[in-house]
Image (tube, one colour):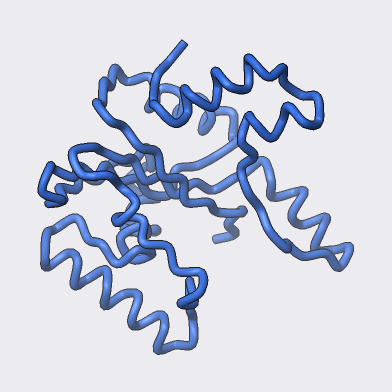
Amino acid sequence: MAIGPVQLVVLGFNHPNFHGEIIEELERLREADAIRVIDALAVHKDADGEIEVAHLSNLTLDEAVELGSKIGALIGLGIEGEEGLEKGAEAGAEAAADGFQVFDEEDAWDVLEEIPNDSAAALLLLEHHWAVPLRDAVMRAGGFRLADEFISPMDLVGIGLLEAAEAKELHEMEKAGTAK
């Protein structure tokens, strides 16, 4: 199976108020062949830091069987409590034994640690279908990815893409989890 560029997006929610809008938007992007959700987890951390995990996905049954639970393996978390955690860790250990290393110590990212207590997060492993032709063209030209980052609205003011007031409002909404 050919796969496009893949990104792990972690979205935080102080007081989740889900009405199906996020799933609807992911479905719209899938139907437009822009992205595919490879895997998705909802993680809730209680006030004591205890974690509950629910598996979410808009994959077809065939895709789900083919791809399995990739986020769990990527971050060493399973959706079946301690047993699932061990399975995720084992999958990561097997990959490392085969010479594959997702992160080195310097680049390590403890996604679960970044989720504040008494909040929730959605972890989305997205395949960017739209980027496949661009990636392939870059590779044919001998190019390679050096880095990638989402740019804060505040940084867009300096290059004239946003007015300061609009950027500040967007930045505060992103950090606080509020909607217009």
